[in-house]
Length: 575
Image (cartoon, rainbow, N blue to C red):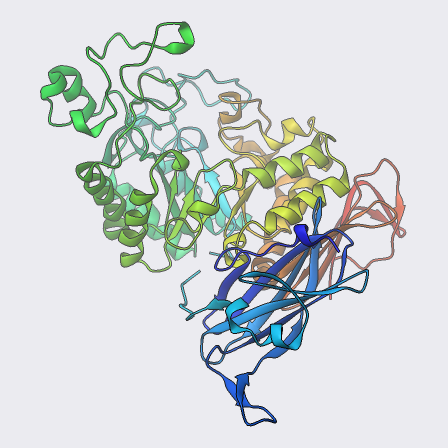
């Protein structure tokens, strides 16, 4: 047995509270190396008299299930009940070779009765503390400047005609605004989405608004606070959550604070708000152009986006004022945090405490493109944008860079990175304002795009649709992925198929939002997805080049007829 391959991290994604009296454990072993894993567990203070009238540790036994296979490891899981809200536990591991070991807090031991009752080697969870958890939301991402022009009186100078066939330039304006969103709330409700994720709406210099001038005002190109309040109220009436996007990593060049620094240099009361290394601040030294070291830190090397020093208490207080203001004044339900991984953890912990003190179930979504465990321990973010998920599905379904077995292994490994309740609120998207559109990556093959989208909607996590996907819009990378919305496609066949998928996701939200996930590849090459919760959902996806025989009674399908599943096809059955 490969002892070096065994792993478990206490009080982490391998050991976490799921409800106030249920603890979930994971254990990891080398592939095909272990025959059985049993957990020995009990209350750390529960002892019983033995036959010699001596008090000794009392423990229960519960076998773990193999919950998935990754690239190099088998993953095991179990849920334990703790009536007194505390537990200690030890793993009994039996190898395929028949050997048996105990894996505990202080290392490996040969399996003996004396080792089983050695409390010093038990992992401990001293006391369970319940926390609140968004699992049934289908998010819809809106890039406000390109969604709909509902009020031409606030159009910027030079606004272009609304042409979805355009290939926008970086500085183009088309007049999209909040009134346009309000005008189409009924269309979004008919589509079935119940969460609106807005790219920034605060006063800024650009069309994308990620260079914030004033966090406490609505950009006049989009409307005003009265209009925004009406929009939130109308969304809430329709059962829709509202998520705003903010950049707390950097400010815009035209912000009052940065302009004061440019005018007054070291004497500015805002000089300490930024990471400034040298004066004068202009012209900016861009090292990418061989101009030497920058005088101040920025987002990437964008001179017009100076980075905030979030370790400064004054900066923290200002940003927390912003974060709480939009909750208290407008009752928003979530924040999406841009460039979240470049802001210090201390600030995010203060942020979490401030917003959840107002709304305990507030959703905090971080933009982090890599593994995110440090932010997902229950005191910073609810979840992050699941870019690894996007990449793995794209690499198999859309570009063929990865095999079906490789993708399912990678996705299974990824589920092991986080607690179940964290996986359930990760934001799963296949495209957004920073990437090429789904249909473009799929080579303008709508069947392929819908197959990948359906697979994504069946996974653990909260799905997100980028505006226009339901209209069959395409687009290369930024800014081509930000075309004006094509409203002529409303209600067309693609829209209907996406609406049906969203309806399915919401109808089965109890299972898809909270149930277990098992991924595998069948001997015939089909990808099999099993979601078990209130019911069992079983889905098959054909990413091979040939039709595959399959017997199924699907409630959702594509390319399935006469017990044959065609390439690019899928079936989803409910038991």
